[in-house]
Length: 188
Image (cartoon, rainbow, N blue to C red; front, top):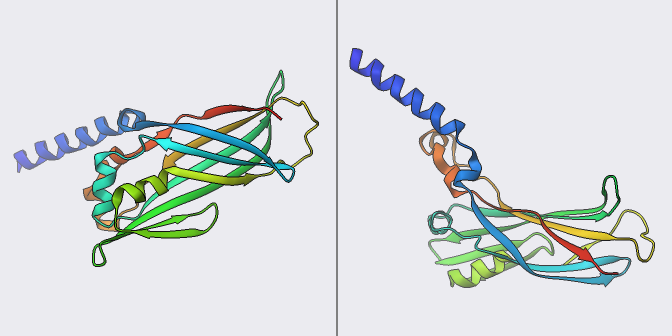
């Protein structure tokens, strides 16, 4: 009886200790590269690539059939000397799901509603990490020469497991991935 109480106390202490460690300690830091910004119908078309966004744990989760989702956040700001003003905002997701029966990866791209199927994990990962020609339009007309900047961020949507597994695998936060905000000046 006394031994089970001590084990229970140790378990509680372990949970409290793990909950006080910042999630950023477990997060992988990827980064945004190859950003392209082109003017388009009063807005911009943005393309980029997310580097180092797949950890071994994320790949294992995908191969186990757990749908994995990357969220992308794009913001355009008018630069001001006191506080930048958000003038455009776009959010979308890329989702990958492995079908073990067909041995295929299904990738859905939220920005253009396209779906792709491939049997090659590397190709599926490339599709997940690549964003092409996302349209982002400011809410207001921007006068020519106004300093503006684009901010981009990508992160893994937290894995949602079925109810009983949530408590068994409470360390799924070890799969976390996110980038810092990548900032690009818009030259037009």
